[in-house]
Amino acid sequence: MLDASEAGFTEFVRARSTALLRTAVLLAGGDRGHAEDLVQGVLERMYVRWDRIDGPPEAYARRALTHAAVNRWRTRRRRPELPLLTGGGGTGTDTAGRDPAATVDLRDVLVRALLTLPPRQRAVLVLRFLDDLPEEEVARALGCSVGTVKSQTSRGLARLRDRSGHLDLSNTTGGTR
Amino acid sequence: MSPALEDDLRAALRAYTAEVDAPDLTATVRRGAARRRRRRRLTLAAAPVLTVAVVAAAVLLVPRWTYSPQDLAAATASLPAADRDLLTRPTGGDLADDSGYLAAVEKAWARSHRSSANSDRGIFDHLLGSPHVVWAGRTPAGPAAVVVQLSDLRKHENVELTREGVAVLWGFAGPGRDGAPRVVADGYPVPGAPDLEGAFIDPGRRVVLVIDKGNAGEEVSWGLSFSRTEKVARRWTPVRWDDGAAVLTAPAGSRPAQARLRFRGGDAEVGNTSDDPRADDLNYGDPRQQWQVADNWALFPVGTDPARAWNGTLPDGYGAQHAWEADLAGWYPTRWPDVQQTGTSLWYAAGTTADGRRLVAGELMLDNYPPRVYAALRGPGTRPAIVSGPTYPGQAVPIRLELPDAQGRLVAAKGKTFAWTEDGVARTARDAALIPDGVTDATADGTPIPPD
Image (cartoon, rainbow over all chains, first blue to last red; front, side):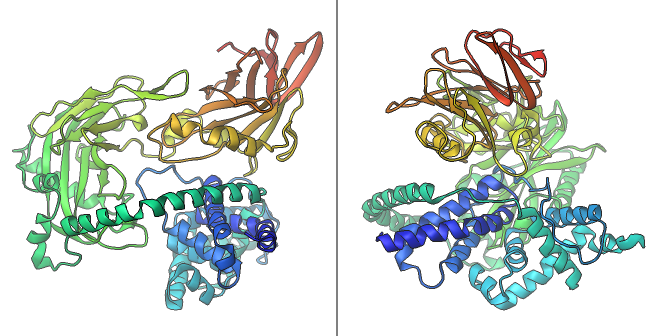
């Protein structure tokens, strides 16, 4: 790799590794170790072909990451996925005005529910709602149609609602239940 | 769909990943990329040979890719002989003539699909024909059975297949709480993975029912042991068939998840090792639960020149994880031959030993192997000296490892304060410590540390 390319790749890794890892953690079902493996594998492949990547490297990376996570070899007894459920982290404002404990509970329930979704459906929601990708880019990352993204998003959210009891939790806002 | 749910989900995902920060991967990626290039060169060199082999296999083996239901008989004929035999052989076992029990098994099989872990892989979506009970009999755990059924496996978002088409599904039934049969394990041909040939049929995981698929030299192993050089060994005993199956009782103290079957030329899987996939981890004392700190790796500084950051604080400038990878990542796979996973430790103890060598230690738990603690000592320009040993989950000090060459003992217990006297000076350390050789008064939170 030429020096300029090397510098470009290094800058990309430094700038985007954390974002990619955050996506990967959710794609990998909360398994941080597996997520790092996924990101590292994607970056290794990118390094080898850095000068031949068409288009924005970030899009390539997300496509490769999603592909690796969704299509990973399935065996019945891989190491169990470990949901990332402790801590909670973050301080996002709850526009619904729930008390902080209820907000943490709700987020915890939603992430738990998300991690139970099928990998492809989970990937759609992660790319849409963590990475804020438009439907067209999600479709490109997953190699499917925009219509499939729409339907998977709808089904995924419906399953989240079912599994998290979202309405019930929402109704606790302000103690109105 | 309500925007409120989308907003909540967006906030939840951000909150739960907010503390995830990537380590500096640049150097690791470069090394990995170099390995990939080497592998690719080897692959390219082997390509002509592989091409010939693949073409030959395609000519000889590839079955029809599509079929109609009317072609079921023909599709069945393409199955492996052992699977065809399972579908057609008369029911074996001393309950073979108990039509009520056989019907109950078939009913339990049909009822089990929705709750099966394989349900979301779509393997039950296109069942064909009727289930067939291959074996039904009494066991020390109660009545048990093996049932098979054809299924048209198709591409599905959650399953990877070598090919679409007809395949045999297997189910193992044991006694349920109400006395009725309960399917405890099911399986399908998974590419690259051994077939399911046996399963623990009782809640206590002591009795294994194994179906005879005509394999020669079938043997069972109930557990593994580690040699002094960390090589894994298993003791194998022959499986004796009786009317098409074998009922085996696990020895006391063995761990269900470590049970394995093998035969001449292959391995097979034992199912239903756990209702809760994490149960064995928990029994072992899952290191992730013991050590993972705020979703990040833990680093415990130890020794005379302890590491206090991930990068650049060890004598040779390595960070703890880099040092671990350099010394250990290629070491354990050569000693744990049948693990499918690779990994790195979730915690590290790092620093310098009294003789000036770099010390990096950590813990690994892959597949269903029990967790092992490792330490690597490396001096300038020398190969690392690596030692390993068991962990002691549930004990006050779960990590205790004697280092080589009288370099002391590594101890670790999250949240505990270690204290000892060294050359007349009182020392303390939190979470982990390197207790110098010859120290006899070391304590953890005031309690003497037990000998190994």
